[in-house]
Image (cartoon, rainbow, N blue to C red; front, top):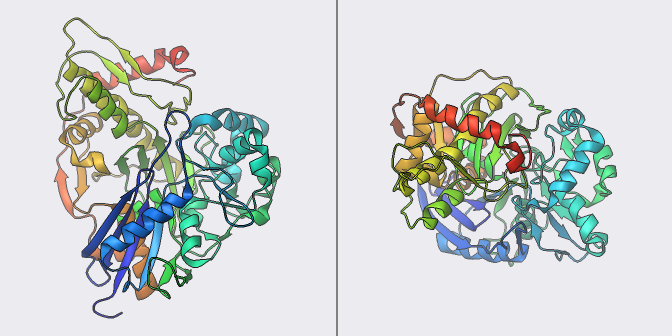
Length: 472
């Protein structure tokens, strides 16, 4: 390792591609870049994969190290279906994780094999987010396009392929497809959905170099390329997580997860039994509605997102895009308990509470699914929402736990950078992150649990199943 070695970590998320240039020896961020994506709206959430490549090119160039970085790795949004023809062209815009049109396909697939069989075979009961349901939707609704498919990959796989020419994925991201388990690709499930296993990428060994940057790419030719992984797995790397440490991430979607030693198999479907990118497991619960939904509700009332007010009895279930946890793909938002004296600020506070409730109640389920006991230490809080006092105080008040907010930003890209750095130093990516002290930040003391708010939200959720399209 040279004193000035720099690597680049990438986060290709739903809304944008972000790149961090990081000094291998110190973990100091020496350059960064960002370029936006466009996503279609409504139930249809699609993106043209070509724009991810354009955004990657722009973001890498902005770092100032595209010509000198020694290695790169890519973290990407999970679950998205990228389907290419023989010439490597997309047969259809990529179906993203939050495209809920495949909800009925997920339900039909679950019925055909049963919840327990899905959980045991691939760790998760498929919902609308899972790639297997999206592939089934494509076959059903766009059969001519599906017939032309010769390669099926995930968003991070697509960018790795464009950089290197290698058709490869990693165990973390592929564990969110619904057709991969501990023994590899599941032949029975692939047969159920009519997908030729020859169309799928090989699964690389954790920590390996999968190829080199090709000539004509937006990075220096010959730079080493890591396996990459899904965004949640990359964030776990970026935090250098040890088993049993719970994380809540507040972004467009919300997630609660932990690295565990045991393999999760939750037949209820609440916890997805993902693998991590190292060799362990990453049980995870995900909500579709988090910061974006709360910001939308603030906008309806002409409020700044921080303009919350205490008091009142209103409950908001902000399921504006349907919901994944609880599994209510056809749900819409619900406001309950409005009075003449209810203020807009109280409604906004209730939106924060409704969004946080699903994540916080899932934390113990996540740990239990992976065979870990609840830790006494602080809850790790990351994502854009972690910067906001309204989010932090809501989480502290509903959880009763101390909250640790790392100073490091863009932990997905940072985790990808740690993965790339490991190619240079021989360390595992989580060891790199701990050496970089990526978790250092601000510790917020616990607050008394607001049991009245928890009881109020729980009661409304219990009674609202018919309105929301299923039991909650």
